[in-house]
Amino acid sequence: MSLIDRLGHGVVSVGIATEDIFIEWVEDASADNALATATKAGEAKKRHYIVGITGGYSAAAAGKTLIIKDGGVAFLTLRIHDTGGAMFTKPIRLTVGNAVSAELQASGTAGVIGDVALLGYTR
View 1 (cartoon, rainbow, N blue to C red):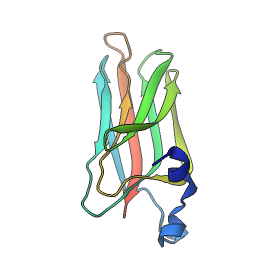
View 2: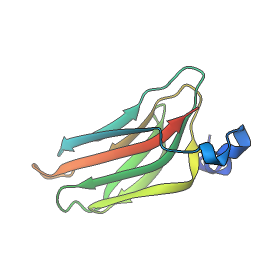
View 3: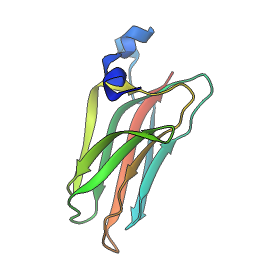
């Protein structure tokens, strides 16, 4: 499923009223100069929706990447300069039953902590 497909389908089109959209869970992770991975495990017959993502470092770390994966397949890469993220106006829908993860690249400097968070809900 392409990113355009994911963003092109609002939750209203799958029978969920707009007022029912809210952040149900937050998965986060931290790492000292190592890959920080936040993961929401897949659930049988259910689909995760991503509402937002954020990543950053405890000190300067320019040109790093933050990648969202659907069941291990990368589909969105953001470039992070110290800190960054996105809140999506339409949630990103993922494949039924798949886990979702967000990976923040290692800082490149010992003692510089990377933090990543993935915000979403499941239906």
